[in-house]
Amino acid sequence: MPLKVFISYSHKNEADKNEFIKHLSPIVDKKDIEIWHDREMPLGTALNDKIKNEINKSDIICLMVSADYLNSIACKNEKNLAFEIKKKRYIDIVPIIISDCGWKDDPDICSILAPNDGKPIYDYDNKDKVWNIIYEEFKKVIENAKKINELELSDTHKIFLNNADLLANAHADKGTVFLDDIFVYPNLTKMDEVTDREKTIDSEIFIEEFYKNKKILLAGENQSGKTALCKKIYTKLKETGFIPIYLKDAKFEGKIGNIIETALNKQYENKTNFNYENNMERIVLIIDDFYILSDKNRFMKKISYFGNQIIVVDDISTFNFRDEALTKQYSRYSIKPYGPKKRNSLIRKWISMNKEYDNNDDNYKLIDAKTEFVDNLFKKTVGKGGLQSYPFFILSLLNIFETTSSKLDTEFTSQGHCYQTLIYLYLRKENVKNEDLDMYFNFLPEMANYLFEKNTKELAQMDFTDFWERYEKNYNAYRGQKVLLETLHNSKIFLKNNFGNYVFEYDYLYYYFIAKYLSEHIESKLDIIKNMITNLHKRENAYILIFLFHHTKNDKIIEELLKAAKFIFDSIEPISLKKTN
Image (cartoon, rainbow, N blue to C red; front, side):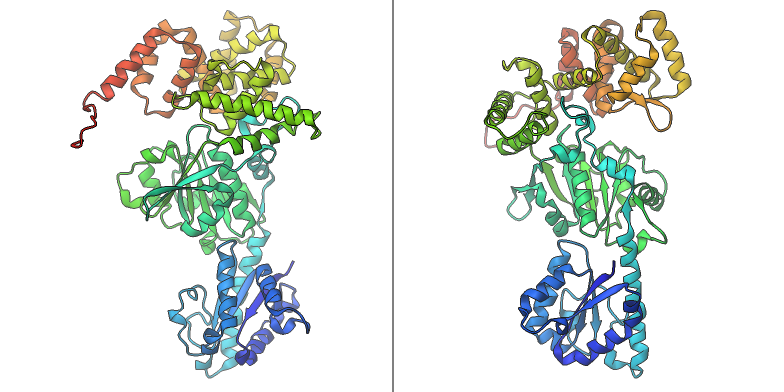
């Protein structure tokens, strides 16, 4: 498809515009571009509306800059509209300096200049030579824009972007839940640096915030939907002409260029002769789970020359750096829990996937009943350190509603109960009978502990064989290894990855089952648990302990946790309400 080129010019420079078009004829003849200017309009067409429409459709906008152009209200409106559009989607704006004028004092006209030194066309003795220089410069813009248009997401990355992760298998009636089926944009808070107050925005318009800020820290709690929001931001950026690159679960070792190239190769197809360094304005790094990195300062320096970044952190208030200058240029946003309106939208989406859903009164009553159930649960947990109103927990509670009575039991407000409910649902969808559940709930904690003891998240076939031989000596896997592994693979709990290694599909499931194992072996594992408590700064320890307290309320563990807390705050004096404090 040809790129659409809009030429903005003063009618007093019409001869220059025609000369420009004449020199572009080889590109036009190849059907690489379609040129539009106001002389293309039929008589009687509404001038302003048509021009606005054509500018909005354009891929490239040429500004033929002269004193007459800068003095024209109509030309200034066209220029302003072009730069407004560039705030909403990426387009190329190419100023061409026709004659001596005050273009250097125009704050917008500062991108690509033709001729490439900004010298006016009228200053050249050989006009054909200078127009050919402009032609060659413009051809580079066209060729690069074509390469970018040809970039397509790889099939595997498309699947990733629409993967609902832990919730993919969580609906009783739908085989696979996709992110598009359930996603509701959360609200975000942003600290206004002028008023020093927080403002709330809907993340659906986050792309507009990105255009204003370009470097962003996005914070969110455990299961607040950080990755899901990143996927949606990625898709919107791609749709608006940017080249987003998603980075996660990498050690980020080696040259940043090699890291980017590797990610590009996985996420995009049709990259023939594509050079990301020539498109730094379009590249947007989306770095998920950044807080896991051990040397954040070093990596921040590595990516400092990328102008567009969205970095995901776990808690913006604890995002500390040795070098504060590294983060001063970042705007900070934080994901808010869903309020009643967002929860209702999510619940409606979830229920609409039911087989019998048909917008009748009974379904509206069901939506109201489930919404009330969830709302009441979250009201009960306010100020008590319970669940936050995030999609994962909302939809887990809906599953609890469907599998139990609607009596509001306070233990339903623990994270562990949400995961437990989903695990049961995953297994039931694979037709696991109640009498067989114990086999799976025995195997999985044992496997988690084996991984924990080896200090790894993956098992090669040889190590798995070693584990299985030990396991069979102590337990009766009466359905057999093949059935057990196939069921766990299909339920996406525990499976073989693309490298042929056995893994828990999600870290949170691993944390859940290692906590279950520890809860069943507290006496022999007490030293390990104590070590976790004294090293709560490690993410893995914190999550395992959260689940451990779901599985057991052992007094020894609570005592150890209180000791650790006292030690942490031992040197801090209690605050009073006196003015001196």
